[in-house]
Length: 628
Image 1 (cartoon, one colour):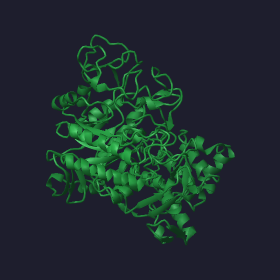
Image 2 (image 1 turned 180 degrees about the vertical axis):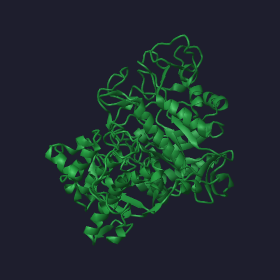
Image 3 (image 1 turned 45 degrees about the vertical axis):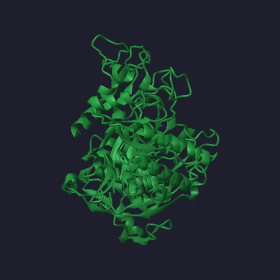
Image 4 (image 1 turned 180 degrees about the horizontal axis):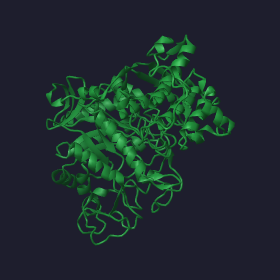
């Protein structure tokens, strides 16, 4: 939530460049050689060695048979060179130029041929983006073949991000794509079972040392009827583990995890809430803001919706307040930071009148908050004075809030695990990435004391994706859930749920997800933002307890409610859109950090009151109220 300097770790830019719409599931072209097998049986054509270890390999023993089964464009098949359409395009000079320019070009057939014959890039990278193009053309079965080939044949392949600052593992991205594709297209009647990829990555150091431990798994038939049979009524399941009291993470007899409030199932439909007045910055305390000195909180009660987006308040645009807008949307949780003075009376009203609870996040040393470490050095989790200060801040919050009805749970940290940059300090200015054992042990120590003070509310960690979670599993058993900030792409979270389950037997809360509403060099694109959010929430809902997915999800928190104009280094009164802030897996490949809200502030003249509700708001209003 602080200004992002650079996201050094992301489970990849699954979409580095835009893909064409997949609204029409009819394939856009036909393959000359689709292969002889719908799902390639790799065991027929070679042997798997050292499965599940970093010495994993696959040895091809029958290359001709594997090529015939796979079809064109999928290694080791080379029949693309005999494809009549390929020959025609080649003769017409249509297959020249930078292969990256063909991603999302609007002509996936040409793009397919360009990528299928690409020789300069790593073959795993070539196959992955071949799969992306095939998927954009609605050739889903062949796309699955491409992704599967990446996992099995080229597990250690890495790819640089667009600004060449960090790398991502292509095999895990391919696995994510398989999980997303089979979930979003049940007509494929397939599911990849038993697969796992554990990676070791060396961001910004020597990516050639990247390793992957692959368990390939296998595709099984999985129909719509199978999905329906996978659904269970969790109210009829026995709770075998309860972590908490009034609010508790609960493990059911089928191994799935849920969240309960007052003994009833509760799925977090949350949003990060920090409505910042234009011209202010991250330290702006919305909980005490009363710009017009009328004794009424600005954002909570006096915001109004600019229905016709004309940047002025018309006669019919009455004050409604964010609390009412959030309730109407179906929101049941807001996430706030304990860096501001908490207005408990305001939050009591939020709960009593609007039914919305509060998740409190303690930075736990992120951006040196509460550790008092120097900015250049970053928070040191072995430093006794810094540890004392961080613990005192967390415990003070517990003492102040533990008896409040509005409290849902606590989260320690916010992406503190982000990998290190060249200076040895990560972008959130902590040494957690280089002190993983000490960081995990300190998390455990503080969480234990929080539990002693407040046994009624769970304590989780605020992570970037799942890095270091293996350390939490070993050294931080006091953690009740894992919170993951995750921005993996516009199709959902892929195998994140499976990876989390394989590492640490705790529920997973998506503590941040979302997408900006600005397409770089093109302008505001509310449709692209809404589509990203739709797929993200549908994936979350698919993986909560009782649903057909992994059953370890307890909800998600949108990032964020309102555009924050302070995030660019330029004028805080300027809604910065001239250049992207950071490259991410968003529809245009970039994140415009000042456009992440599902509501805007118009031209800024009526801040902090004006609300320009984007399509994403109304999408959630439909989805969340439907599930209430």
